[in-house]
Image 1 (cartoon, rainbow, N blue to C red):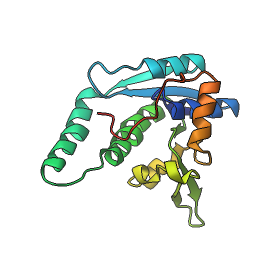
Image 2: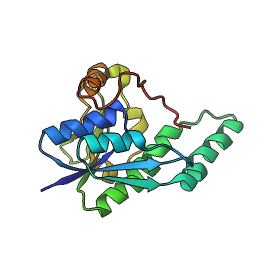
Image 3: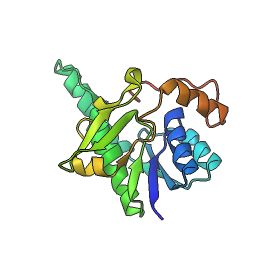
Length: 186
């Protein structure tokens, strides 16, 4: 049976992506990244426990500081407007975390991104905008390679963020007080 690695932040999107995959019969294994010293992984742990998914915590604090935060600060100081989320998705989520997921025996990686994938006639994988145009996140995934896209799965790509958030609350995967995540996590 295929095992899918799910990137879990503990927010509504990753929680619902996991729930949808589990409801459709997939076996899951959760992964979360600790990107800051003392960062709280309790939300991800809570979601994993509620869904009976084993969870692995990847400790990437020093590497994140070096590759993302420092690069962001330096670019900004030079007058550029950096997009650290694009870099983070390529290097961390679909780099280090995907590698850990594959090494753990999973065949694919799912996330709570609002994006879609399509295989073209020439077998290349095309990254498409999410159906919810207001919450589309394909831009943040635009630098992923064909190899990375071939291992990706976006269960929320056809859904509306508003509906996902409401259902996550209704299923008690998140609390009603939780707010929508923002682009920068630091």
